[in-house]
Length: 173
Image (cartoon, rainbow, N blue to C red):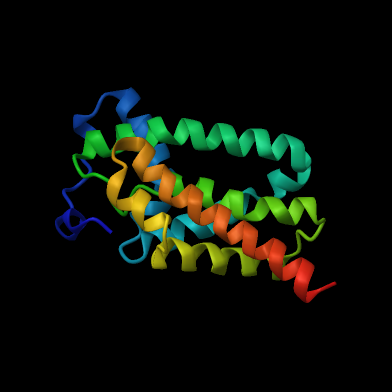
């Protein structure tokens, strides 16, 4: 986490344009990132509300939507950071939405989208997002702007997704 987040400036919606308000509202995860403690965890929990959407859409459409969510997130996170004047602020959780959603994609492929596997995916994503092993740590430290905010969570989601596949194929077959 960026040390600048220790002294978070208040988000003053009244001083923003309507466009900025909309983007910041999306960036803070529709309010889920405004939790006073562990906003990334709250954002990841909120992302679990997308599970019915992923089930409804199926694997192919979900991959397209999650890819679009990730690409749009580069702008949303970058613009939100610019408006609130703090890079990778903990309150910005759109990146958790994308990372958590990436984590769950193998469950669609494996047709294992049940709450036990969703909880395993949630835990794995949070472990990788907090622990930040290489290359997650590299992306977190070296890549700036909206891409930097998104990239570490995208990689964490990919690592967690890979673990789900490994667990499924080596422990359950």
